[in-house]
Amino acid sequence: MPRDPRQIQLEIDAARESLAATLDQLVFRSSPQRLKARGQAAVQNFLTTAAGKATVGALGLLVTLVVVQKVRNRND
Image (cartoon, rainbow, N blue to C red; front, top):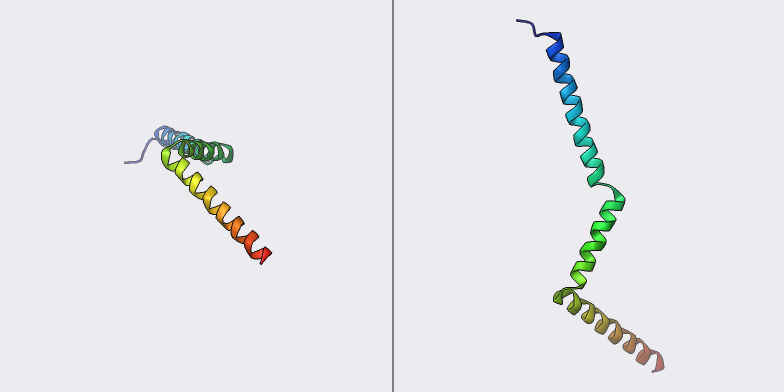
């Protein structure tokens, strides 16, 4: 039995609207500004934790040791 053309058109329109909504969500999720803001927030949140502070301290110590070693080697 053939399908009603009006019903087919309604299904096509519904599918088109669903695809448009999905595309809008993908555009929003992949927005460079949004991704940048999320990344910055994640880093800031990490740096306020104990592990983040320890990491920054360890990196500071490592940089200090490397600089001191370079200065010592230059003077030798």
